Amino acid sequence: MFKLLSPEQNKIVEGEYKRRRFIVFLLGLNFVLVLGVIGLFPTYALVTTRLTAVNDLISNLNHNMGTSTDADLKAWADETNKTLALLTPVNDTDAPYEFFQEIINSKSSGVHLSALSWHKDAKKVSLILTGVAKDRQALLDFESKLNSSSKFAPTNFPVSDLAQDKDINFQVTLNPAL
Image (cartoon, rainbow, N blue to C red; front, side, top):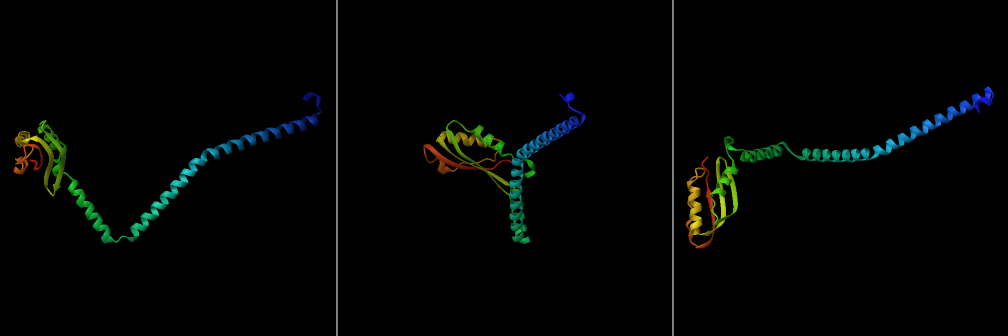
């Protein structure tokens, strides 16, 4: 068909094909760009939202820090340091798990523990046990097992705990042998 056209008409048709190819290329490029913008919009929305949240957080922190005085900050830091000091083990030897495990292993079937508490004041550590013993003998056996343990200082259960015959509620403070 092209061979039937004159050279001038052939150049006109060739120019028209080039324009059409260029238009199809531009439409394809526009399509890819539109898809890219649509694909990136959720990311843009998330980033904008997070930026707003971070800016709000920073403005709140600046507002709170601006109202605090040096004395307030020092008092807060001292209180935090005291709390951390209480939580810090003495010579890295405080291990509540080992003491709790020893108590549980010393417990007989007639003794049911309801609470185990670990209290530490400065350098003194104490464990408070609360529970119910089935009878007097079970409570006395539990006391003797705890006293025979090398992990605790000898302890006497209160005499009032032995006043009942059955279902004896007890609470005792143990001092670990650190």
